[in-house]
Image (cartoon, rainbow, N blue to C red; front, side):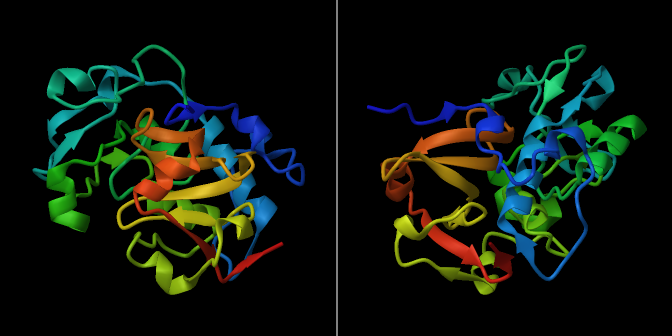
Length: 238
């Protein structure tokens, strides 16, 4: 039986067409189309981003606008939530998850330099509030914002909006790098098959195993049980 999530080295998912992605934190701006190798290279860049957490990047409580924020740092469990990970004083890898976040790697690092807090997890309150739950004093990226950046979209498209710019695939066998697996509230970027027909290698900005951009291998059956289906962006090119 496969584990639910198996973290794998992001380099194994990176397309050979973009070997320099790990050396450059810049990503291309909005475009009408995106190449598959480019989408995967952008995802890889997010997963490999290194940054240095400080005490000022932690917040568990109200931001200056009165919005409740919980950063996914190592103290998160003491506030009743799981899957916190980054620690002050230790180099972190992978951009932190932020509800409503749409940062590029450079924007994220600049926000940290200004003293914004690193990430803001999804909670029942956030889901109830929607966009109104997004903090302007936190930085990071959420699942659909991550896909939107990988596809070079001009703005963040929500999980509800993504079907409007995609076509649903007839079969999981049709998946290609840069396609997505989507259910009603979360989305993953497909990289390749980890075990043909059985487990997919993906990139995601999400809660498992921790709140950040991860590269992981996930059993297909696990995703099917949770309503994930394969979709293809109409602007993606081979």
